[in-house]
Image (tube, rainbow, N blue to C red; front, side, top):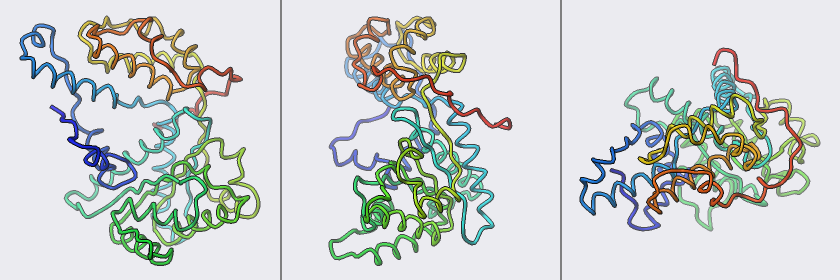
Length: 346
């Protein structure tokens, strides 16, 4: 059974922005899913074993399996295509931008692309544990060039000292990434870079420099990038000319939405939950979450956690209503065009 960390410091390695955290994410995503005990098996457990089993179930629902939406599949297809096309490129490699409103699955799509590449790289190069196929960083608010370089260094476990200047950090990062055969660099929260400021423009130049020095495909994700300032001016034109865009949107109430709810319900480990309860409530859930995949995930996972903590072991409409949702889900949004259609060959 999964054990919880004994201290917050042990949990630090779970963050995706450090290599140990990314590797744990890959391991947990590829591990066998936990199976649910029958009511009779559960009742036969000792008090301590019941507690451990419930803790494992809480952990399972906290990390509930990602559903492969059409947006995720399209992102993975586009990203892997670019990775293959960039293998023979010496410079001016093509990249990918995942852009859309908050809570519409941008980070999910980005990390699933990284997961797909990591698994593919391990299959192509078995036993080569020194490889670091994927780098994942987030852009800090008001990022400076040194802050960008420091994020790369922290992911790789390189020391970031006060005395370390950007040249030292950059050279160290490029050296490790090149030696470790990094093939994909994921940059989240890219909207934190504004080309309207000097530091923002320099931070953008730093990412461009990394993309020229590291033989990898770069994939960005951020909120409404095309409406922001990242693609404006000469620097923005350079980015727009080298990056493909995948848009995320709130999901309309359609067959895919129904399938998303059904799949998430199938992943529940609640022995008193009646299958089909959530699928019958899928329109209500869509109205409540405004079709946002991030809010949907929080809604169902939160209700599942409550069901375990309260002992009801099932999700009902009342249980869904008891979960407080984000403010954005309560705002009225104009209907979007829906998520990007999956590649026909996916």
